[in-house]
Length: 397
Image (cartoon, rainbow, N blue to C red; front, side, top):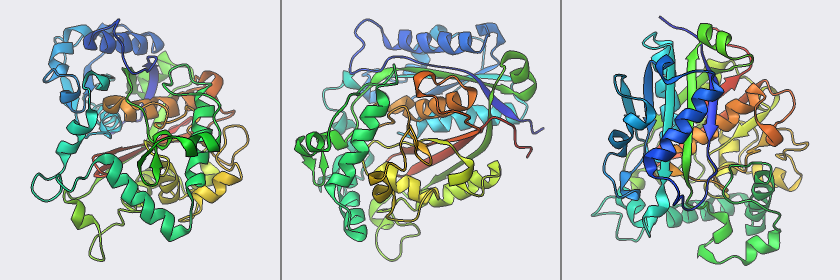
């Protein structure tokens, strides 16, 4: 049984470094209740729950999804935990979609929360993804790995640090319209350039914050969606792809995909867009919500998704090509991951922001007449990638 699937309700909290007023499970419950209200549903209406939870080491609590069962109304229902690192939230959307499309459930709640700042040094946790013998002691980290990737990308296409800074300026400005965003404000290219260097060419403002908060989404079959939601966001395309574990195997002439330019995402996007009937992304998609924890990642993603040719995204940035106001495509009207990064649910937040654009529920971030929007998520060191296309009308598969 294959059925069309749609988003009918979403919620995300205000994201910040700490939430001392709430426990982890209270954050998850707040998100679950908010999404159910947005979908005009009660807990009894939900058939299954997908829990979006990345490394629990950030929280200091093992398997926090179990702790949250009663708080998210999960007792007596099937619950599935999803974990693909930073891609977790996007993978959770795909898992829920699959349950509904296969006819195993009519209404699924996707929910998660993050308290990454509970650990004094999240990087020590993140570094555990590297092989202990060959890679971890180099010393590699997410920051240094992306810095190496960025250096190669900038050299290949003759780009400059000021090009990266313009991305940050746009992101922070967009986030001013987003009541949930962590970092926001009017900043200048010079201010970005003067922020402390973390790993060349990345400076502090080129890197996302550590954000805490909760998020949730309700997806349902088309029949249910049309009863509960005047303007649902149909999930018209999904795709995910995974790369080999060894970082060294993703470099050099024998690698299948170019790590420096995120070429893995091109394969993923081709599959997703084909399913969604997207032949010309620049013409058919009005909004993107891209997983961009670093100022280089969004540009590479735009290129691999086919919105522009390789090496041109940052040059087009100079011309305002990706602006919310009058760009050819509104890139991350929410401010994106550069402004808000609650790792366990970052991909879910990207999907929520994209779906809300299609549903006309994006508030001050709303782009007029959005018929299609796309979200992405990336986990590990670009090891897990996924992509979701939301549309105002269903694409019959």
